[in-house]
Image (cartoon, rainbow, N blue to C red):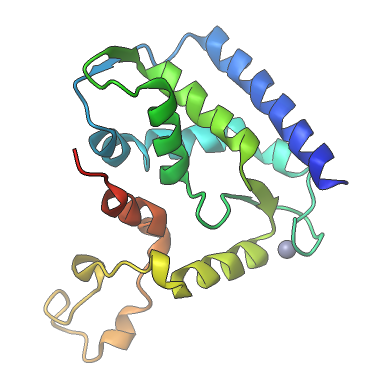
Length: 187
Ligand SMILES: [Zn+2]
């Protein structure tokens, strides 16, 4: 499938899902006096992760082949530099530029989904998705050291070697989520 055609299909699908969400009449919480950074910190990894999962359902994923290798898709992939937190920030800048005003949570959610229409968002198999993440963690721009998430011997006195603790689970701390606050602009 042509890239443009694929994008058009995803856009159409996003519109359909937004219409479905509107029927459910959810996310009516009012937001005000909340900085974009605070909003991203509170909602990016919980609410918006679920929104992505509920929008691009497993059944929908099955209709797409992996963008890299052509195998069956298993993962929803935000492209490099277009991670979920960055998409959320773009949405906030678009629909909630003046944080002293009141906005309803669902307006932000829909704007966030719409941002995916003009991004590199795609579907991949688990292996290609993992390869992309590795590429990302090797690029200087996104490497953020979180000393507090690296297991230490002090946490587990019975472990002789930190290697026994296994690799740091970066999945639990998506790089974009950690990097987002550093992109903050002076206010
Ligand atoms: Zn693949």
